[in-house]
Length: 156
Image (tube, rainbow, N blue to C red; front, side):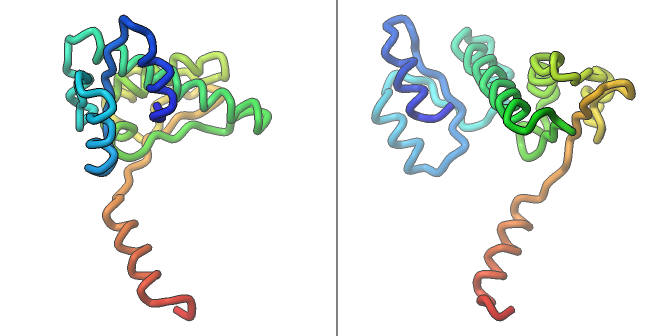
Protein backbone atom coordinates (compact mmCIF):
# COMPACT_ATOMS: atom_id res chain seq x y z
CA UNK A 1 0.00 0.00 0.00
CA UNK A 2 1.29 3.45 -0.80
CA UNK A 3 1.71 5.93 2.01
CA UNK A 4 -1.29 7.90 0.68
CA UNK A 5 -3.46 4.77 1.06
CA UNK A 6 -2.23 4.35 4.63
CA UNK A 7 -3.11 7.95 5.39
CA UNK A 8 -6.72 7.35 4.39
CA UNK A 9 -6.96 4.15 6.43
CA UNK A 10 -5.24 5.72 9.44
CA UNK A 11 -8.04 8.27 9.84
CA UNK A 12 -10.37 5.56 11.13
CA UNK A 13 -10.11 5.59 14.96
CA UNK A 14 -10.07 1.81 15.40
CA UNK A 15 -7.28 1.14 12.93
CA UNK A 16 -3.70 0.64 14.08
CA UNK A 17 -1.33 0.64 11.16
CA UNK A 18 0.73 -2.42 10.33
CA UNK A 19 3.04 -2.27 7.34
CA UNK A 20 5.71 -4.25 5.63
CA UNK A 21 8.44 -1.74 4.89
CA UNK A 22 10.72 -3.01 2.15
CA UNK A 23 12.08 0.46 1.56
CA UNK A 24 15.10 2.43 2.55
CA UNK A 25 15.76 3.49 6.13
CA UNK A 26 14.71 7.09 5.42
CA UNK A 27 11.21 6.04 4.30
CA UNK A 28 10.89 3.68 7.27
CA UNK A 29 11.91 6.49 9.65
CA UNK A 30 9.42 8.81 7.97
CA UNK A 31 6.70 6.21 8.44
CA UNK A 32 7.59 5.69 12.13
CA UNK A 33 7.54 9.45 12.71
CA UNK A 34 4.08 9.76 11.16
CA UNK A 35 2.65 6.71 12.97
CA UNK A 36 4.75 6.14 16.12
CA UNK A 37 2.35 3.55 17.59
CA UNK A 38 2.39 1.40 14.48
CA UNK A 39 4.07 -1.99 14.43
CA UNK A 40 6.48 -1.94 11.49
CA UNK A 41 7.64 -5.24 10.02
CA UNK A 42 10.82 -5.16 7.97
CA UNK A 43 10.30 -8.66 6.60
CA UNK A 44 7.12 -10.06 5.09
CA UNK A 45 7.85 -13.44 6.70
CA UNK A 46 7.25 -11.79 10.08
CA UNK A 47 3.80 -10.69 8.94
CA UNK A 48 2.95 -14.19 7.71
CA UNK A 49 4.11 -15.78 10.97
CA UNK A 50 2.34 -13.27 13.22
CA UNK A 51 -0.95 -14.17 14.90
CA UNK A 52 -1.65 -10.49 15.55
CA UNK A 53 -4.94 -9.44 13.89
CA UNK A 54 -3.34 -6.29 12.49
CA UNK A 55 -0.66 -8.38 10.79
CA UNK A 56 -3.34 -10.64 9.28
CA UNK A 57 -5.11 -7.51 8.03
CA UNK A 58 -1.88 -6.26 6.44
CA UNK A 59 -1.41 -9.57 4.59
CA UNK A 60 -5.03 -9.59 3.45
CA UNK A 61 -4.78 -5.97 2.32
CA UNK A 62 -1.59 -6.72 0.38
CA UNK A 63 -3.26 -9.64 -1.41
CA UNK A 64 -6.41 -7.62 -2.10
CA UNK A 65 -4.52 -4.68 -3.58
CA UNK A 66 -2.28 -6.94 -5.66
CA UNK A 67 -5.27 -8.84 -7.08
CA UNK A 68 -7.02 -5.52 -7.70
CA UNK A 69 -4.05 -4.26 -9.71
CA UNK A 70 -3.94 -7.49 -11.72
CA UNK A 71 -7.66 -7.11 -12.48
CA UNK A 72 -7.14 -3.50 -13.50
CA UNK A 73 -4.35 -4.49 -15.87
CA UNK A 74 -6.48 -7.32 -17.28
CA UNK A 75 -9.24 -4.83 -18.05
CA UNK A 76 -6.83 -2.37 -19.64
CA UNK A 77 -5.11 -5.08 -21.71
CA UNK A 78 -8.28 -6.94 -22.66
CA UNK A 79 -7.25 -10.10 -20.81
CA UNK A 80 -4.20 -11.83 -19.39
CA UNK A 81 -1.65 -14.20 -20.87
CA UNK A 82 -0.14 -14.97 -17.47
CA UNK A 83 0.67 -13.83 -13.97
CA UNK A 84 4.31 -13.83 -12.83
CA UNK A 85 5.42 -13.87 -9.20
CA UNK A 86 9.00 -12.82 -8.57
CA UNK A 87 11.38 -11.37 -5.98
CA UNK A 88 11.16 -11.96 -2.24
CA UNK A 89 7.46 -12.36 -1.55
CA UNK A 90 6.58 -13.67 -5.01
CA UNK A 91 9.29 -16.33 -4.97
CA UNK A 92 8.98 -17.47 -1.37
CA UNK A 93 5.46 -16.92 0.00
CA UNK A 94 3.18 -19.70 -1.23
CA UNK A 95 0.22 -18.48 0.92
CA UNK A 96 0.43 -15.04 -0.70
CA UNK A 97 0.54 -16.53 -4.21
CA UNK A 98 -2.43 -18.77 -3.32
CA UNK A 99 -4.54 -15.87 -2.05
CA UNK A 100 -3.77 -13.74 -5.10
CA UNK A 101 -4.45 -16.61 -7.54
CA UNK A 102 -7.70 -17.45 -5.75
CA UNK A 103 -8.78 -13.82 -6.03
CA UNK A 104 -7.98 -13.96 -9.76
CA UNK A 105 -9.90 -17.20 -10.39
CA UNK A 106 -12.60 -15.26 -12.24
CA UNK A 107 -9.91 -14.29 -14.78
CA UNK A 108 -9.18 -17.96 -15.48
CA UNK A 109 -6.36 -18.56 -12.99
CA UNK A 110 -6.67 -22.08 -11.49
CA UNK A 111 -4.07 -22.69 -8.82
CA UNK A 112 -2.37 -26.07 -8.48
CA UNK A 113 -1.97 -26.11 -4.69
CA UNK A 114 0.71 -28.83 -4.71
CA UNK A 115 2.82 -27.04 -7.34
CA UNK A 116 2.47 -23.79 -5.41
CA UNK A 117 3.49 -25.40 -2.11
CA UNK A 118 6.51 -26.99 -3.84
CA UNK A 119 7.51 -23.58 -5.31
CA UNK A 120 7.46 -24.97 -8.85
CA UNK A 121 7.87 -22.66 -11.84
CA UNK A 122 4.29 -23.15 -13.09
CA UNK A 123 1.79 -23.07 -10.22
CA UNK A 124 -1.47 -23.35 -12.16
CA UNK A 125 -3.27 -26.43 -13.43
CA UNK A 126 -2.85 -27.61 -17.02
CA UNK A 127 -6.43 -26.55 -17.83
CA UNK A 128 -5.99 -23.04 -16.39
CA UNK A 129 -6.83 -20.42 -19.02
CA UNK A 130 -4.24 -18.10 -17.47
CA UNK A 131 -0.93 -19.50 -16.29
CA UNK A 132 0.77 -18.33 -13.12
CA UNK A 133 4.52 -18.67 -12.78
CA UNK A 134 7.21 -18.22 -10.15
CA UNK A 135 10.30 -16.76 -11.80
CA UNK A 136 13.49 -16.65 -9.75
CA UNK A 137 15.43 -13.40 -9.79
CA UNK A 138 18.86 -12.29 -8.73
CA UNK A 139 18.17 -8.66 -7.85
CA UNK A 140 21.74 -7.98 -6.78
CA UNK A 141 23.07 -9.23 -10.13
CA UNK A 142 20.64 -7.00 -12.03
CA UNK A 143 21.60 -3.97 -9.93
CA UNK A 144 25.29 -4.71 -10.61
CA UNK A 145 24.65 -5.04 -14.36
CA UNK A 146 22.73 -1.76 -14.53
CA UNK A 147 25.35 0.04 -12.44
CA UNK A 148 28.12 -1.33 -14.64
CA UNK A 149 26.29 -0.20 -17.80
CA UNK A 150 25.88 3.30 -16.35
CA UNK A 151 29.54 3.51 -15.42
CA UNK A 152 30.63 2.40 -18.91
CA UNK A 153 28.59 5.22 -20.43
CA UNK A 154 26.36 5.45 -23.50
CA UNK A 155 28.99 4.36 -26.02
CA UNK A 156 29.42 0.92 -24.42
